[in-house]
View 1 (tube, rainbow, N blue to C red):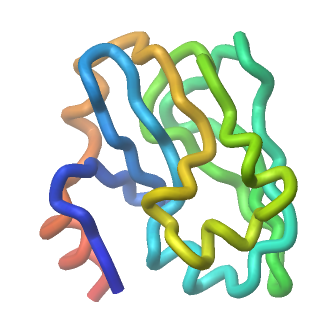
View 2 (spheres, rainbow, N blue to C red):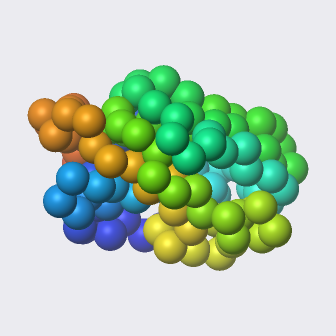
Amino acid sequence: MDFPKELKYSKEHTWAKIEGDTALIGISDFAQDQLGEILFVEMPDVGDEITQGVSLGVVESSKKASDVISPLSGEVLEVNEKLDDEPEYINENAYDAWIVKIKVKDSGEVKNLVDASEYEAGLK
């Protein structure tokens, strides 16, 4: 299992790649592995406000549907339209298959996330 060091992680198994005042958000390699084959991704609309700790969408797999809990708050700038046609791309590369790009509302929320080594240790 892979846990890129440049990302921040939430205990709800989402990741954030923070670049200035924007962030890409997706689900972790661990989460996609637990879900199994991903069949559908429900995403918010561009312009929607999402809140840290609250569902931003749903990932449906062969095993179950699971809320995607946002690791940060902000305005949705972009959704990964590739996932409309290829939701299984999350299974192939969880860290390239981001779900949303947001404008981060409060950079102080990053303190609620953990780095790769803390996230990995929490899985054991």
